[in-house]
Length: 115
Ligand code: 5GP
Image 1 (cartoon, rainbow, N blue to C red):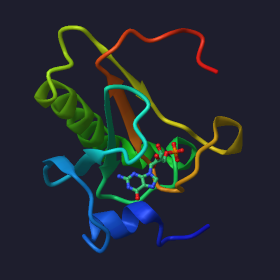
Image 2 (image 1 turned 180 degrees about the horizontal axis):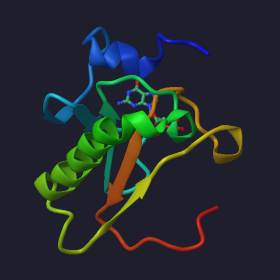
Image 3 (image 1 turned 30 degrees about the vertical axis):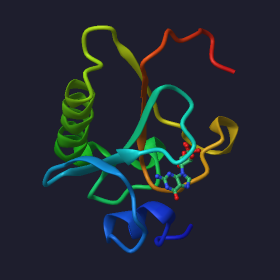
Image 4 (image 1 turned 90 degrees about the horizontal axis):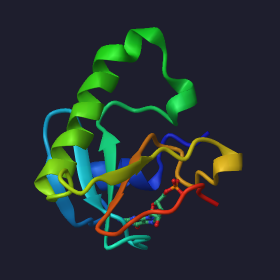
């Protein structure tokens, strides 16, 4: 398990990203390979590999992270029509970056079930 992933480097500003929102708990930036008209990634500044790694003691940190997701969606104008939040978690979900992140996808109607 690497602790120096792409998102660690983006958080340290070593790799550029198009930032849309930042506060003391999260950084949000556009996905380089968008899957919807709006596709933003939100990462917590506290480091976790994915949802499976969260512990009960992380509840406050995770709460602030989820508030960041909500703020980003509102800032992007997605709240009225809605949007999808995705946490790819582990190999079956095709998680490629081992740093907890939420995908915010919006700007079009989604389909269900996902592939
Ligand atoms: P995952 O597959 O782990 O859920 O999501 C990783 C996401 O990171 C993918 O949607 C992928 O397009 C995005 N990504 C990969 N490399 C870069 C990059 O260099 N910059 C940005 N902004 N996104 C990236």
